[in-house]
Length: 279
Image (cartoon, rainbow, N blue to C red; front, side):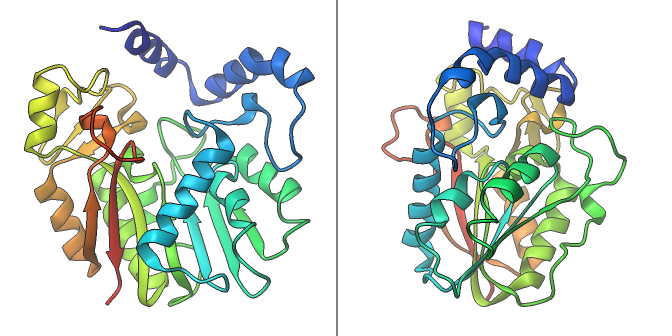
């Protein structure tokens, strides 16, 4: 087991709230003296993964534009909006007729977006939803499988989920896909990332080419990276994923494999990218 994998194992044994505090303390010395734009949160508050905050946001924005042809007056829903990584990037693209809505279950991320983004861009609106997730929130028993998105039908041109479905179990994904279909306009797109356990990924796992992403805790149609913190990372067999998409009435129009299963793959995506459309 690599040093990084060992550290991740210990990190997952800390309760969600404790992880947030630990990260804040780790980066505190640098955050106290670093100069940054008001639209960029301190490193210690960023809980949404690795990579440069600004550049990753721009990458997500360009991925959306490349696959959907989204216009500046579009209505966008960012599911799992975190601490505003995509939102900040979208402030340079959406115009005053556009709309950006986001929701997340980590309240401190939503609070930061409401304080730093919405006052300057009032068409960027963020909501906190209190849902249970063993990686991010154990303070409630409310399940994502029963959650109704707080929006009317046929509201959005694009719905995005970057590194969201990769932290969700099947019954929760089934509900979210159904809700995405409901809130999308006809012809609208869903841009989402997953870990997909196809045959090539399984072969690379067996050959030790995927590093810590071994997903060794296998179940019927899906697998966990960590059996204790199940929603830390979840991977799906193609057949299971296809069945969930079919049941939602969405249609897959594109799939791009990411680097997680092949570090030498020429792509700017780490997770596998899927584009769905409401026909």
